[in-house]
Image 1 (cartoon, rainbow, N blue to C red):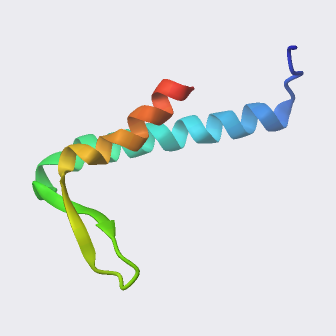
Image 2 (cartoon, rainbow, N blue to C red; image 1 turned 120 degrees about the vertical axis):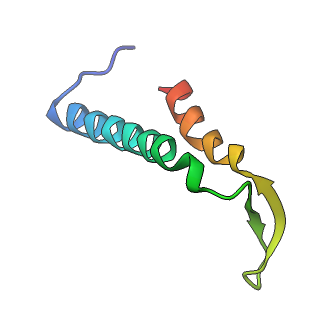
Length: 68
């Protein structure tokens, strides 16, 4: 079933696309300034309990691009 598109859908999809491009651009432009090890998870006390590499910063933006 095809959904009817109206101005609201077009607006929200455009805003989301602009935000995704902005996130990827920010990561690309600042990649060299990120440390090689970043916190990957925080426990309930707010202490980082799993270190990860900076490549993990790309997981969510790339999943967003793949899913759209």
